[in-house]
Image (cartoon, rainbow, N blue to C red; front, top):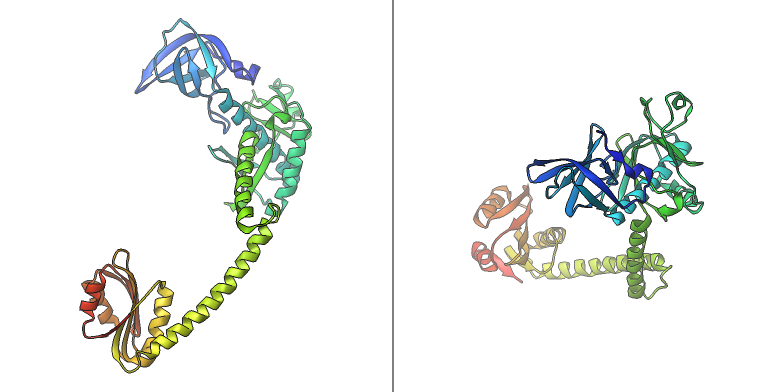
Length: 387
């Protein structure tokens, strides 16, 4: 016997009574079929409902051959009457996301001729894939139009046209569908074949926020949030912006300009700092003049800084310039530079001796070492050591 689908009769129904038709154990769960149910099964890009049924937990719901199967964590006796209670907060969230997706897909189909080729309601964001181009710069206007649809509180029209009526019904699809076809229509915005559960009117969506639009395969992927999810996201963003406002001593609507000014100041300071560091490198390098082979320990240099420092020392030392920077705990970055010696074999031997990784060209070798300062000094014992 087919299951009576109460979720199509009343999308807001959260509690109901039904009779258990069958109960079959499969692995660690029980598959339970009722004569009627308000639990929506997974389908149409929408996750299933969850909740309680006769005192046992409903973990998942699937439709199989017109029967709705409830995957539960404990058995129920066939023939008994049970009370079902869906997690309505979970259901309403999914309805908000799904109806919001229809509004956006309808607007994009009408405005750009793109078809929705993929739809996923994740636990954090919704993603919709389209088979054509939607400029990211248009997201603001799309968002405005979508929220206008919400504010108008348009009642949804959901029905199954007769076989005779279906050819005359306009709905968004990439191919003709066999009857029966369930149509979900948002007058003025969208008409689409869909098996999902939706809000009764667009006002229940509450809010639509478009987050991003990026190229994906032959089209684009849009990320969005609706309803309570969108509000929570914007509230978190507002809290973060207040923190930035306080940190920059800027008005909360002027944090972008304050951040840009701070970046410009930091860039200027970095430029000046780099100039001072190079000046210090050159002055320190002069202390290595004519020392021959020299090992220099430098503080807080990245690999690029290590290379630049070794180059300056190699210009004046008259031998091999070895510069290392790091710590015994974290390891050391190194660079060897010489104006006259082929360093390839020397670099290989260094890596073997001090658990190193790296390489380079005949005139320089660069990499990292897992060794202590004492081991470095011992290995380079015939070098002049500085730092």
